[in-house]
Image 1 (tube, helix red, strand yellow):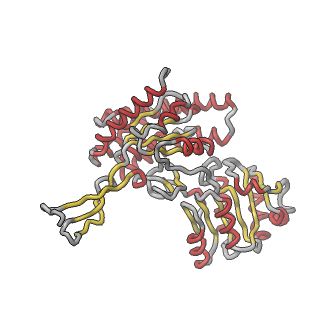
Image 2 (tube, one colour):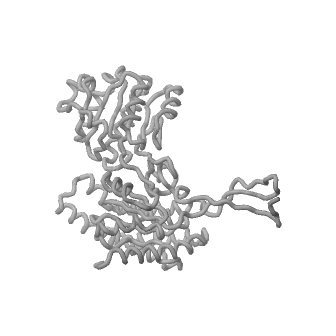
Image 3 (spheres, helix red, strand yellow):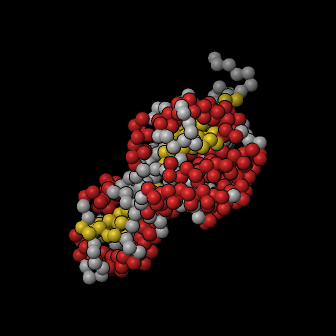
Length: 424
């Protein structure tokens, strides 16, 4: 039990700052060995992780957590394997720290370039998903940062079990144990302290519900990398392959409901609505997906399935994170783009088309962090982008956008080389 939250968080911050200086000079070999050691301990302790997670799941059911939240909370053998694979992939990635780019001679004779460096101390606040503890720790370690992790109260047992594996790996390789610190209290005051410690923390990355992120964005005294919603779209063009369209639209919604890159609104060109929507709606109905449609959508589906709800204005700007899908028929790609830019969250949007010119226009004019052609929006994460893992998805335009991997956790400083040069 932590009696004084302010002092406790200040102590974590001070330790993290000291550890960050050691991490900045750690070799690539040391960092990679640490990641492999953590992976080994996760594998050895997989049964303990599942048992700890079972406590959280049982408590979540008793508290009445909804299905989407329980899905994000659950650890399975497959998800533990994915965490282990993520660690190994991050270890295999090129280390960005110390890279010097753009070195060139100036008229004065000096050489000027930029070196990639860690951000320093990264505070990460997240809800539900215990796998974030590993994703965040691995990316921060590989990028030479220290991190303070504050997971959700609903995942306390899972996060502490994962933290034990991280500490075991750090200790085995002789890395600073304070390079990764998992906040042990569920007191919400800890979040308030973490986001207002600029003397210790260089950036905050929140992962969670809109309410959490809005609060952090409003109250933080530290720069924030964030996204508020994942209102993602698939637009089926009248020049799209309808077989591809059905496959992509079905996967984008049903592969997993509780993620920020799950499709929440399907836009269909009205010229192909009658050919696509009846069979696609039937597939959704088999998965118990609730459909909410515009009048043209309801007319196109009539006779194929029952129970389609009339969509409201609010539906177009709602992130369901559940088996609910809004569908709208549009008269052109321009209308689809306008809808996406108005109602979307600038996260991930995809077009299904065989027309090269239209695909180029779509990726140019849709203002989102990931824009796709003939691809399910569910690919919009760090693992699928070759980042090994991700620490979050940013819909900001500064300092990083899209899935945040290693490079997103670094900055650059100027390096100037000379040989006794003086300014005239």
